[in-house]
Length: 302
Image (cartoon, rainbow, N blue to C red; front, side):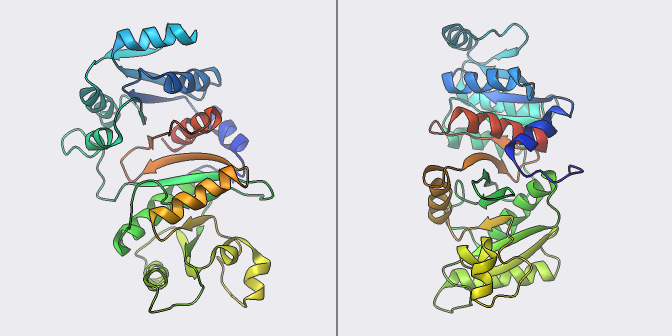
């Protein structure tokens, strides 16, 4: 947990640079976009790296991009699946602090993360949390889960919240204000998401979710806008002030997140959480800045 509240991506990068560099193990690192992000993170002194993959392909890609690997540790493993296990084992053994996905199928990568012998299991479900810096907001907003869990159960949602709360504490947000999103702000038996939202709020009251103030159901406007909450007569410590937005399913999380980037011109960084160490899984559609920020977020968390 940081000793100050981080309100922007610049704050995150400065906080990372104030710490001793963390080591990131990259699985199947022979990828243009990944090596460009690695180089950018090295130049900004965000982290050190161990690249696991086909050494000939890694060097050829680096040469093509004009990237020097003189001070970068490279572990030769030409088989992508085995490279994932090698990278995971580096993290689970303490030789690295953060895991990053390279040019490998996500399912194969996560299979290594969840391996019973060398993996990073904790007993909690893995989930994706995205952090957004948005125009007009004086704080960071987090959204979960728009990347991993398709239709999470009530218990999975409790884990998803706990994962995000852990990240929030690293950003200096404690206790985190968590809004369980739905289309309305009242419990409606015909809308299961509203019933689960109310249950999650009560679970927090009973200590089943820790480090957070959880309320729901809340519509999006009532969760992030005080005036909207006041107009609806909603009295809640979360309404209008939410740090974390929990969406009912992956479609809602994915569409909300992409709208913040492509329509609202927000900036994004993200992590897969719930493992023993942070996991960086970037998309090829992510901007260079988003990849760098995701590495920075992982280094801060790690």
